[in-house]
Length: 352
Image (tube, rainbow, N blue to C red; front, side):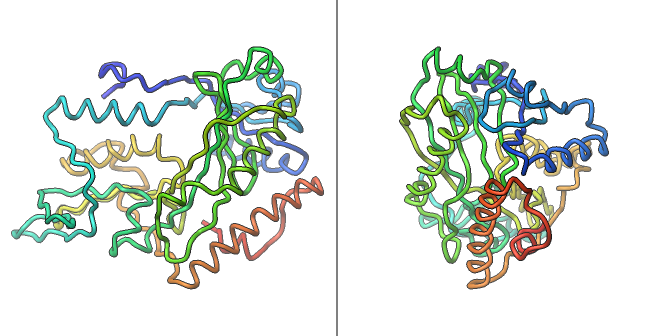
């Protein structure tokens, strides 16, 4: 189902992607990136840019180079999901909202089908698809299969033409750097900068609460990063700040599964790349459920099961230590100009 055919205006814009080396400490990672793309046959789709070539696309303080690929687009996820909802309703489906699922029961061969449990009663179906990403951690059977990790975002006010002229960014590429603790940014349709990243702390026991979508220290850090990346915007205002949890499997590997015997299907573990990965997952699950052999059903994510995360308090200790250690490694690299190197406990805990 194509968005244009369904009349879905999802704000699609294919401007490509820039992975930026913001200083000498990122250059080795940049070179490693290029080598990896070449090794897997994608070298011609990923171009190494020097400092001047990077500045022709976007002027970022400290940028010494970048990897550019045209194979990336930006969309408005909210508009996409609302458009998809209208499309499935036109086909006769009913979407039920506002009722929390508290558990599930697999079906039995020759017996009753799988069941979703809610506070208002049980719902039985021939097939149940569990695709709640980080929220699946709130179900007992899947509690340790994923870790809820918050990704937070700040949004600037609309920039003036003069401000955009000082930055460039005319092609509206998606942008991120080689920071271990993650950053990502885009230029919106209405002329703002969206800047996101990690930093909000993991909470003991993997709870998910609406209040966790705000973490002022992290949001303020992200505002400071906008000003650091673009010194000409030191006085820019910000209008919005928000966030949400993403699902992190222990091995960072997504999983698309379907068991015909129990009627349970699942797609999860996108590690922050869910906008694109859910499209693939939905089509793969459709083929698995209908018994259609396809290239999608041969993907390595099919039938994959990640190891469980460690039980508490080991999970809390390890994740909080790793979060802080990655931040310290980034800060040291920026201060010394040397890439994070050598073995470390944080790298071992975060291996995948």
